[in-house]
Amino acid sequence: MNCSALSIRPARSVVGRQGFRLLGRFDHMAHQFLGVTPRRWLEYLVAILIGNAIYYFSLVPHLPDSLRHQGFRTDWGAGIDFVVCVAVYGLIRLGSSL
Image (tube, rainbow, N blue to C red; front, side, top):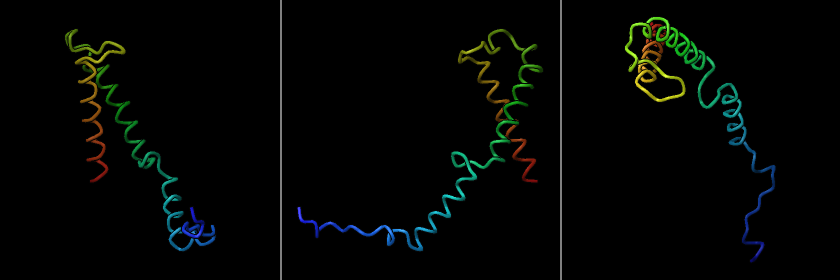
């Protein structure tokens, strides 16, 4: 293989104006985790905590045994809990957009 056929650039020419713009994007991404802002993670956490509190303290005493969540299983109770958490998250997002 001919070495002149390879286009090897010095490191200094790789980072130009374009490279510094990319570094700026990475700096912005440092304030996010998995593409989500800390505020959104806080909204998720609050929705899960409030949704689980509503499910376990308000709904479970009135649900039949077949609709209650049994720990570490995928059942109808887990689905209802999920729907309650999603509804609470929707209310949080609706409230924050007003």
